[in-house]
Amino acid sequence: MSEATTIARPTTATLAEACRLLRSGTLVAFPTETVYGLGADATSDAAVARIFAAKERPRFNPLIVHFATVADAEAEVELDARARMLAEAFWPGPLTLVLKRRPSSRLSLLVSAGLDTVAIRAPDHTVAQALIRAAGVPIAAPSANRFGHVSPTTAAHVADSLGGRVELILDGGPCRCGIESTILDLSGAEATVLRPGAVTAEALANVLGVTLGSARANDPRLPPPAPGMLRRHYAPGRPLRLNASAALPGEALIGFGPEAPADCLNLSRPSDLEEAAANLFATLRALDRPEVAAIAVMPIPEQGLGRAINDRLTRAAATDEPVPPDPDPFDHDRGPALPCALPDGLE
Ligand code: TXA
Ligand code: MG
Image (cartoon, rainbow, N blue to C red; front, side):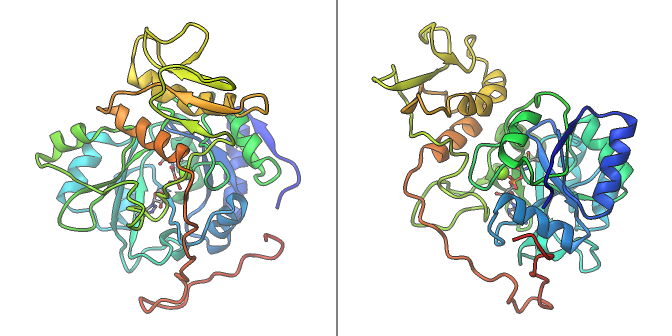
């Protein structure tokens, strides 16, 4: 694990250094249009294993692999007609597609965590695109925060979460969307949203011309729709109370809309859901302070981007996450035993 973390503005020189680090199996955090990612060479078992160690992320939780182009992704996964249409409409952009992995794929089996699928996307950010192209390999990247915590939308957030655990953070300023990509499972006959995100279900349904299946979220009796969609996630260190109309003593209020009290932190005074999504994680982090006993949040409309915002808030407010058993995805009859030993010194 690295001792010191460098934060650098993206320049020709720092991008070249980032590529050198990635090619040598080291972690580099970089900006995307959604949130900052913690990147590693997706074709290297040792590099991908370092992501799990740095985030303290359970090994059953697979990773999104980032590509520069559809053609590059095509070498690793099977793209059907639906995937092509959606990639054409939304890539580069905040849409992740879960697709069947090709047997010939060079991607580390660790990115799939024992599944026969891979989640892929092409980020819409010049720094992310430049990095992937220059590295010459697909980049596995979860959000650059410790497991279960609030996702980072600035380089400083990454340093707060992972300082000392990542060699280099490329600082591209605040992320434009501020909420993670939408995850759509296309590995079966029905297209199913596993995680609501920056592309709305309405926009996806328009392009596909069909109604989408929706993985039931937050039902404690059922396993999570995507392995990483635990009921409690995105959690600040304070209790969170939803659908509040005002703050109780000791609470800090997160508002939404023109009616919210003037002295609260307002996600968007003009009730703009895009602005609210962009402000959400930074606001949760800003209130994660000892003098704040609890956080109260005013209601957000359950439509369009509001669904993704409410999904994150509901998970951040959940208190009763049963710790899931850690199934051993490495003891699987689907293929050869997967490499699961971490490189020396990582754990
Ligand atoms: O916007 C984003 O998607 C950001 C940026 C960095 O690209 N990434 C991100 O990654 O949010 P992460 O690891 O924080 O969330 C990825 C989610 C997890 O819930 C994981 O379980 C799910 O995607 N996932 C990954 N591969 C999957 C697969 N093959 N099948 C189903 N779910 C998968
Ligand atoms: Mg995450």
